[in-house]
Structure formats: structure tokens, C-alpha cells
Amino acid sequence: MSKLAPFDGSERVVLLMLLVSMVSLAFIFADGFVEMEYRWSSMEQYSYGYMVPIVALFLLWQKVGEIKSMDWEPTWWSFGLMALALLGWCLGELSALFIIVHYSFLLAIVALTLAVIGWRGTRRLWAALLYLVFMIPLPSFILQQLSAELQLISTQVGVAVIRLMDISVFAEGNVIDLGSYQLQVVEACSGLNYLFPLMSFGFLIAVLYEGRLWHRWLIFLATIPITVLMNSLRIGIIGITVEYWGIAAAEGFLHSFEGWFVFMACLALLTLLIWALNLRNADGHSALHRINLFYPSLAEVKQISSGRRATNRTLMATMTLCVLAAPASIALFTAEEIVPKRELFSQFPLIKDNWVGQESSIEERILNKLLLSDYILADYHRTGDPLPVNLYVAYYGSQRTGAAIHSPRSCIPGGGWEITDLKQVELSDSLGMDAPSVNRTIIQLGNQRQLVYYWFQQRGRTFTSEYIAKWYLFQDGLTMSRSDGALVRLITPIPPDTDEAAADERLQVFLREFYPELGRFIPGGS
Image (cartoon, rainbow, N blue to C red; front, side):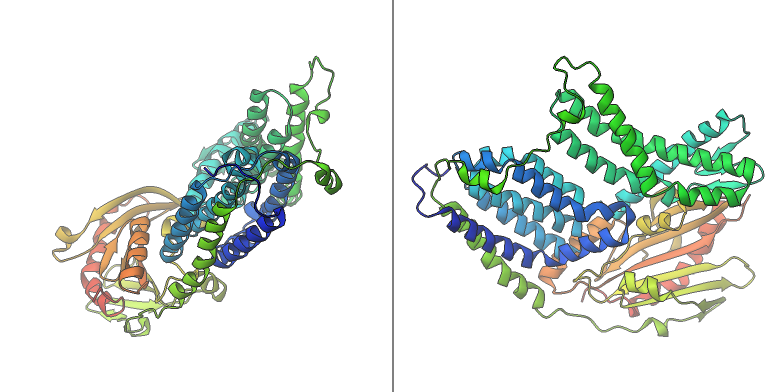
């Protein structure tokens, strides 16, 4: 920790160094900001993200008077944390894991705060710094799993609401069977569109609330059951409407009772909870008066006497690290990347032995999101077998600048399919050849079931874990100057009342014929 001494410059010098550091970080983390903003604009559950930095600034400004009056004691921990943040940025960029980039930026903000005011001041700003976590989107696979769990909970509670009206109803998974009609609780009905905004608002109210600690915890945690309750009530009312007035009336209600209407209803319940917590206040303060919305004016801040200031060597060192990292980031990502030669998937065999394939194409709007370099999507039929094998291979010549392989664990639930079984299977023995380990999963949509094999193949290696693949993407980016790779996925139907073994046999026979062909189209490690 720096020794307290008269400040060897003005506070304007500190602000100038802080500004230079922030500009450098904005340049370094620019790709991460672009990806984050894309998620805010394209995913309804994160549309509130634009407001999070503004609210965080409000929480910071509430404490600005305290920060100015206290002694600033910068710590050299800031330099180490900034180095760690920049290392995380490098790892996240090279592995195309933007969640690492995003949290590394927050760590960099904490490091700058420590470089200016030290641990004591940073603790005063914990709420503003922690609130920034709400602007970071969750990884897709966590989001999909959370959505699936909320769909099941909302379905069960919604069915209970329908049964209260003495309506005969049956639930299987996330499908509500009313006899004459089936309602499927899809991802859009999971409640995530309200959960994340309400949790961020609940956290804000808990921070501003001047009351008992357990009150504050209850206000924040209550946002979860409130969201589930309101979403389940919405589903239940839709079921009741279908039973008595038909699907057309239910669709009209669905459009009216969604979005901001449900969110405002959740806010009303949260307000009711705060009011109930303050029914027996001895001090006579109402619930509204316990929400601290005070913020000092600029004139009031100017009148506050400044505490002692430590020398600014810590901030200078941290700023220098940021400034030097900016051109280093340019050098790292403008270095020539090796993109190996390969055959295009337009040359992939559609006829081989007793297999005949028919290619299809991916919609342009989906291709614009996938950002892949080349792909094949084809249905293959074997002589004498009416059931197809769908082959999809997505190849990326480079996984830098935001283009990255999309895991089926994230994409499959997005189409309404539910992953009911997932395990890793070694195929070399069963195929009698050098074959990859694959993820074997059963997916289901209503009464439809399909068997899926998939794996990640890149630079001479095959993986079942997307995260191990990401690690080698980082390693090979540094050691081989390559980031190319592919996702390989096979799908075949499992008809009702048939054995899964027949579907396994179909995929494995297909692999025995076509897996050796992939090496021409997906470059190895040499």
C-alpha cells in the first residue's frame, strides 16, 4: 500500500490518467462490447442491459461525496488485477469465449478503482461495481438449461392453476394436454424475459432500501418466485381461455398479457412485499421513504473537503499497463493467421456405396448469425431403409473476431427440442476403425424423438467438450497461429415404439462409410 503523503498533483491529474486508462480499455475490449450489445439488442431477456451502466453511475454518484472526503490509499494489488484482467481478455478473445472477456472488463474496472482510492473506497462502491454484473449475458448453455428448468416449473404450476377451475388437464414434460388441444410451454414462455430484468431491479431496490438486512435479502430473492408465479399464472389463464373460449381467444390474451404487462405486474407484487415489510414500523416511516433516492448535486460535491491523497505512482503504473496493452492487442490480432488449404463441402460425396444424399441450404438470416466459412447440410438414405441420416458440418476458417462454433447443447433447445439424455460414447471399437468419441443425445419434441451424435473436430483433434475445445483454440492460436475448426452433427429419427439400437446402428454404419472422408474438408494438425 502506498504511504500517505500530500498529493503531488491535482485531482485533475488523477482524472486525466483515469480517462486515458478507460480509453485504452475501451479500445482493447471493443469486440467484447460489440458482442454484448448484440445480445442486448437481439435477446429480449437482456434488453434492459442498456440501462445497467446508467444505474451503476447513479449508485456511484450517491457515494461520490463519501469518496471525496475520505483518504485515498491506492494499492499495488491494482496492477496485478489489471494484468490478470488483460490475460483474461487474451484468453477470451483467442478461445472465442466472450463471457471471459466480459468479466475481465469488470475486473479491469475494479483494478482501476483500487488504483485510485484503494480497498476502503472500493468497498464503498461495491453496489455500483456489482450491479454491472447484470449487464453480462449468461453463456448460452446455462441460459438454455435455466430456460428448460423454468419451462417445467411454469408448466406444473400452470397446470395446478387450470385444475383449480375443475378442468381436466394432463402435463407431460412442458406439454399441457387439455384433451381437445395441446399447449407447449416453449422457451419464450419460460419467464426468463421477466426474470433477469426483475432481478436487476430487485437488487437495485435492495441496495437503496434503508431497513433490516434480512428485508433487503428477501426483496432481492423474492424476485425469483414472483417471476415464476406470474409466468405460471399467465400459462394457467391461457389454458383456461382455450378450454372455455377457444384458441383464438387464448392467442388474443397471450398478446395482451405478455412483455411489459407481466413485468409491471411483477413490480406490483414486489412493491406489495416492500409495503408488507413496513406495516409495523416503529419509526412511522412508510415503505416509500425507506428507498434512498438521494444524490448530491455537483455544487454540494464541490463544497466537500477532500481527504488526504496518496502519491499516484500506483495509478501511473496501472495506466501504463493499459496503454501498452492497446498496441499489443493490435499486434496480436493483426498477426497473419494460417488458414490451411482444404476442399470445399460442395465436393463432399453425396453418393457412396448404398447411401444417397440430398443437399439442402440454411436460410440467409441464420447464416448471418452463424458466420461460418463453409458447411454441408444433407439428408442421406440407405438402400432399403426409409429413415434418413441428417449430416451437418459447420466449418470455420477462423474463430477470431466473433465467429465461433455454436454447440448443439445451446442450439437444439432453441428449436423447442428437449435434451432428455446426454452421454459420451467411444466408437472406435464398435466401428472397427479409428473414430472419434461423440456426444450421444436423445432429443424430444412432443411425441417426436431423434438420436443425435456430435463432436468438435479441429486442427487434428476431436473433442466432446466445447470447453476443452475452447482451451485448445486458445493454445493453438498462440502456438500454431490457427483457429480453424468444425462441428460435426448427425441426426436420425427414432420412430415411436422402436428400439434406440436401430438408430445407433444407422448412424454408426453411416460413420463407417463417411468419417474417413471428413479429413479432406476439415484440416488436420500438420
